[in-house]
Amino acid sequence: MTIKKEDKKRGYFVYNPDDDHGFPIIATSAKEAKKIAWKDSEIDCEWIDIRVRWKRNTKVDDLPIGYVKDEMLAIRRGIYDWLEDATCDICNEDKTVEHYNGKVICGDCIDKINNKKE
Image 1 (tube, rainbow, N blue to C red):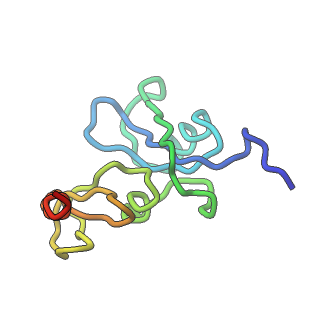
Image 2 (image 1 turned 135 degrees about the horizontal axis):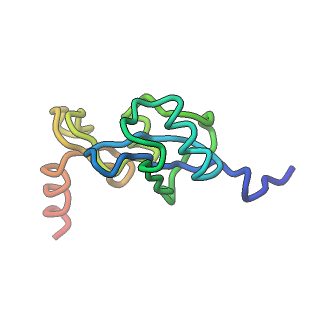
């Protein structure tokens, strides 16, 4: 069975440009992602204002289509670029974290890793 390009699941970041946060959505198209966010998330704006950004290199094939409510799952799969007040995999402190080399870690730990490489 071959999966058509238009049926391939993708990760999308759906947001209101006037807010500082958005919603991770799994869908097969930007249009579908916008509909899902409108229906299932707490997006607070008019339909015409909703923006959708396809997040390349996400690993979402095994996830169901819809709104990803688990923020840690969303960052581990590459839908979020960063996340505030989340636990760093290395220092176990609640900080702003990002996905880096397969782990969710804070900027301080990333700096320590990069300084060891130098």
